[in-house]
Image (cartoon, rainbow, N blue to C red; front, side, top):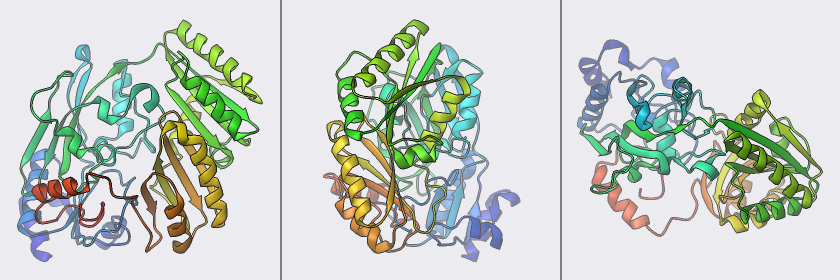
Length: 428
């Protein structure tokens, strides 16, 4: 790989390529150390990196903030880590049109701070926002608690630019919210885990910051009571932007206490928010809530930040795993009960944070061995992915129905199998 390093150094600025021991150790992927780490400063530099990597047949892993690198399988091989954090600029912002274009290495925290100055927001609440990059969030299809009210990245992404194997820059969508021309290529890259191209920039539609917000945390002595409250809430005209179910372990992790709780949020006009808070509080009390606590200002922000961080995978203990599940919203109560029983069966505790009305559950399980985790995963419903450092364990759920199409798309985009080889679903 000396040829790869020499080729990159001859094509880029001297400080863009690093191969010292400390840097290489810091950018291991599942324990596999790259031969060098490159940090392109411009999209044109990224194209050069991809062209050189292809010429040298170098297997590479895109790396933004490094917050999702433990998701999925270890790479089959790794020659090069491509850092995107220097690609951190706002490319275009049209406040009156509520659209923005940013480079993929910009952190979500930096984007949120920028938009706050303009009274606007991208309503996503990812874990570790000051580290997580826009490109990484798209590649992993990361969501947040407010997906209930505002949707996911799929709903707000209106344009994308990627650099493919060989260095070609490819674009999809644009800066227009209602863009229906041609194939919707943007959706290919959502949740592709760096196997089709390296994301260079993305365009989003924005929303104005809400005039008012409200948060209540509702504690229950019995999980079925909390789930019954959610069922009724789902059938009303009330419109929470977030509805999180938290079990006892999750409450402990966010600095709260109790058997289980619902965290509910509303946003919008002040009068509407007050009505939502009042009516949701009355609803949960009808279902036996032990307490309903209203949180304001910094207290509410801290609560939702901690809830958003519950499924973080950047730092895991040697005997820990994070698992994402997707079930029907009507099946969340059964899934929670089943997960807790399955964890007890293998001698582990489980922290559960569920986007209850969206059918998404995040489990943090500990302590587990490889054998115990493998047994647990086989027993869980709707497994999407697994993040862990434990060897010889499943990392993905059952292959989806379109797996053959996914394999053919991968073969078209990356025929040399250089992008994150072996990390995604079998053959993808």
